[in-house]
Image 1 (cartoon, protein in one colour):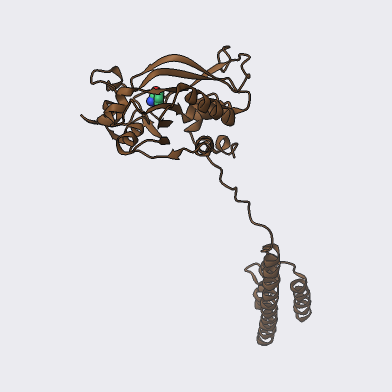
Image 2 (cartoon, protein in one colour):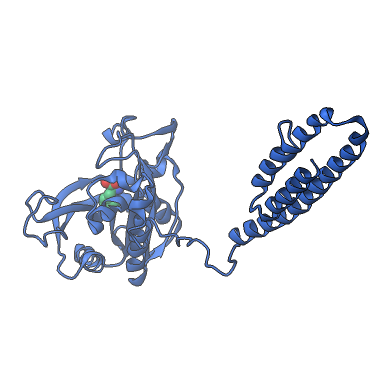
Length: 340
Ligand code: PHE
């Protein structure tokens, strides 16, 4: 029995020494010291020994058990340390690697186009003037010669805040504000938000943007208006772009014109965008109605002027050949980041 004990001891110590992982140590422990382990089996068999040999053998078994337990513990500590080092090595972070790229922001295409529009007119000596979006009926309609019963005042077109206060339906009230507070010469543009009770679709939105222009001085003619818009169109959309004036009506201008620009997509040849005509309607314009000048306190026998208004959305769709207004409002980064 002593021999067997020695054999178990040597074999188990060797197994422990050679164990490669904490999990195999546990298997060895069970095989030696567990309920059905070899050492436990020997201990049970001691009942068959003569009584006088039992204490000695018991002592020997306990020695072996102690030796194995000590060895197990020592090896467990070693393996745990080694496993920890291996884990640390695997999880090492290289702090010198570059981080994930943060994309630079980009301007909204409408902001790009609006900046360009403003730049062109500032380059011609215009000043940018702001006006309120919640506006008196007086400026939005009255001073612009839109009489009380005019259909444009219908609540179906205009958002009313109160009886005499509206969300401005155009940027033209800024004209009225400037004319009533300043003396000519006047040369201003006024970009901003406007509101109309329209259903949103591919070409309409209840909130959109216009840019108004106004020039008042002595001897201002329709030729000045035409020349100004020609220059604007070329700087905005390219050298080959021309303007075409068609007779129209606005209460605050006389004469009035709808202004078409050469279709930038087909250069006037005719395409789907311009419905085959080669022209795209872009602006409203005209000579400031003398009645409006007088209502605003400007001597219409001495001064004349022109005004124009255009849609910023429309200009953006044209400039970038975008088929649907909704792209401008959906804030889809895949769309927006194409424009820089
Ligand atoms: N305010 C007009 C519109 O919204 C456009 C316009 C502005 C026309 C200035 C003439 C002069 O339709």
